[in-house]
Image (cartoon, rainbow, N blue to C red):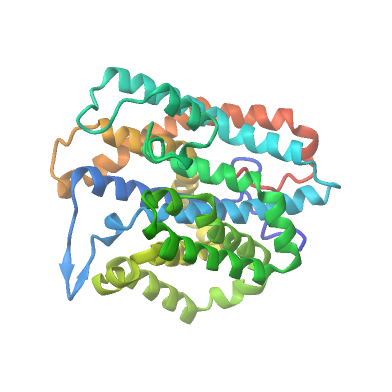
Length: 370
């Protein structure tokens, strides 16, 4: 399906889609709220049988949402590259590496520096050279000792890079039978999380594997391909209410969260449902709310850097006030630091990447920097 005027609504940063940055902002805010819950205690507000602190407890589904966003953006990028002729796997991989590696390697270096200055012995083991090497090679989710080493959230970078490595194979299967590919990926995710992982000595190696998250990635590709067919239906008021009810009960209803939490079913359900925002927020009315559009856009553009430093900031910050008083303080610190690192590291490397791949990028300048 060709790119349309709706796809061309770009953010102030060239080459980015505004509504995608809005959804990235939602994802990173959820992750930040989860880390606030993890490091500074829960914030339970119980009323009428609902726990309205669920956004903190289950905010980690922002990671699932990031995987859906990656599938959406990679489908867009792949289509745009295909319009320029046969896709070179080498060139494709170079673009991915230039996008991911520079900010990531700087974040690893910052972590090692911080760890050398701050005593985290009571919290975690010291980072070893093996930890650093496996992280640099995106293999740290393959061994139990390195899965959460360095910064504890970097495992998703390994999953993302492994998905990018197999993207040509995934796309080949997907283009032949879209729904068969999605159904197969869903069955694979269910088999791994509900059957294989519980029977393994290190279940998290399976739960946080590339194969476990393949279904969300493929679902993001489906959302991109069918966005124009689904947009009217998903933006119907009744459908919006149903989606809101599903998210409400998933986050706040203790019965739902208890019964669906096994096998990551709740995580995938919430992440996939939030992924529908990629279609719901593709609407000009949101851009007309200037303060909201500017705020979400800025956070979304910096979301990668904010994610890289989110856990790092929280694990080294000492609680100085109760959560119900200091929520905005604890939330603002990682977002502010991540935004500064975006300006200092990520944005310059993006500009350099654009210069290096300028001939290819000019042919599809509506492709978001994903």
